Image (cartoon, rainbow, N blue to C red; front, side, top):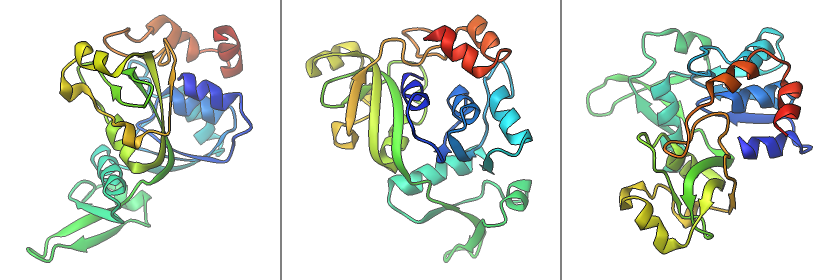
Length: 230
């Protein structure tokens, strides 16, 4: 969210945003920064529909490519492995194929089974927020669910990491096990220390989502909310 705030203050616009979406997508849409969203959902979790994104869609201000969650993950995996697509059963027999007429199917050369060919979700830039990182970009997630930060980093040409705290490299293994080091410096273009950088969303175990602030976000104009939060 700290990095999103930077984009809001920048001249960037006409963006294609690829995200398991939340208020990151909502704020960028409300600010007129987005041309197209690629997502399986845009939600605030305890508030099912992200209100600013919903308004932008209802008013026809942004294009939407909507995939099944599994298809979306396969798109990231394809980009991470520099493949043009990956086959999956996800999406077959659903309206995903109807609302995305550009999707194609392929047949397995081994079983002749028909599968969805999910195109790679390659990105110019990935923005991720993790708990800890060193100055070179090795980044660590300490929460219970590693999400997809590493896939985003691998799928993008450049990755920028914000983190709760920059520490010495040796300190990373004191913070958590080796498996928590999700992102290697080889994937990272830049890193910045941004305490509270996921606020008002959560960054477990450092802090959880601020439900009261989320409710306010959902009920006031976006610019008023951003001005309040500085």
